[in-house]
Length: 160
Image (tube, rainbow, N blue to C red):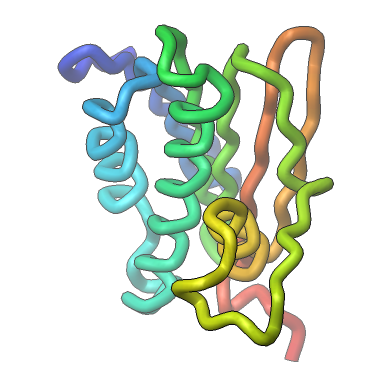
């Protein structure tokens, strides 16, 4: 375990399994940048072009912000983040919290096609964005814990 600031990192490398990084942050916007730095520093740049890297980062940021603001409703709590990087296959980000239950996979944002983006109702666009960016988005409620898994396949893993 590596202690960085108020974050504990567990880094594990398994042969042919890639890299797994696990850490816990406070559910506080102050720690958001630290979590995103972990992703940025370990995302395989040879597999994901800069545009995909940025999209993955934005999806993870949106998911973490949703936990901070909605699961804990700006109260104290913790978020466990697990990055699994499997070279040639995918990057998988698992976000776990013990906040209020919210299944983003069941959430759809009704939009009025006659309204401009500025006139649309506030909320829900981040979830739609996450679903559009990531190849898989899976929510599970395990006891009193929310678990959101975001997966992006490596471009070299797509069948031709």
